[in-house]
Image 1 (spheres, helix red, strand yellow):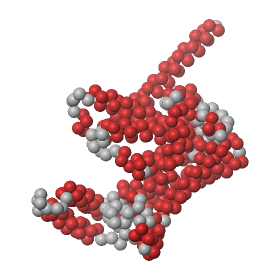
Image 2 (image 1 turned 90 degrees about the vertical axis):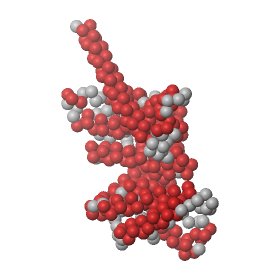
Image 3 (image 1 turned 45 degrees about the vertical axis):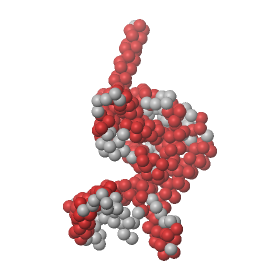
Image 4 (image 1 turned 135 degrees about the vertical axis):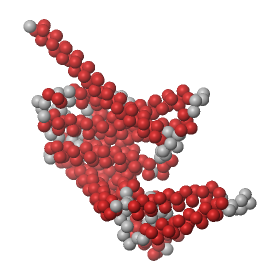
Length: 413
């Protein structure tokens, strides 16, 4: 009887290992396919020619796709673990979710970046500390460029008429140029392209519905403001918890097992909020990364990104995504304990490093937001005092007042 029980236990363990390995493989296969299509969308078409470098390009494409897939897995680790914990807590005896267990979650944490992460964790956390506050302030500008702003005190028909006249004038100048003329043909072509882009976006604003203009944009801005405020407030609360409770340390105590207890005070709603904030921080860190002047040239372009830039972008995203679970736990965005090699670092148990990280994040984020929302006032003050001639005004991309914005009109104070 004992022999049969032992055989049955071995068979059950074997089937569990096969099931978990299959699930891990399928998840990674999905991430790999998605990553492949993302890279193909940005990869320069001329690099696909059959020449002596074709094999090198294919190997580079494979490595870049693999790196981006691992990055996606690192980003999804913490949200998947949080939602799995809540599902197991809500449906502990459900037959259809028996495959979702603590063993699978631990295997996923060990499957992604088991040893590579130990080499880049600290660098990734420092890079996130630099990029995320910048990205949180830049998100308002980026969403403003993607959405249609309300047309308040603006005559779009007049703007379209004026931009059409400017387009026709540039076309006449461009067609009348000769080699002896001093005007730069390339500059005129670029200016004409910018004018056409601006005209297209003005026409899009005109065709937009009333709901899109007057409801979507304010709602998205308010949502971004709420998410940013909650993130800063959670970091501030985590700082207070670190000062009075040593269990707030990311490597302080081991939490309950998967499915044993909810990790959020508000249950499933709190877990959903944590997942939203984790994704929001990741997107903000990527936006902040490409907003930094040093990394501005790394920004990928559709069908016009070289393989070298693709490799650089994939490695950069890997560094950022691999540090996301540690940053989220260190800042107190979630109370989910870090599993696998993510939680085996001595610096996570250092009170002064963790407290300094939280303080720096809160201070830098607050300063970036203040700088963002007071840029127009500062520019007017500089102009009134005549200091704009000394180049003391804000020169960031999102505060330019003479260049047309991406949603189709010039920014006017």
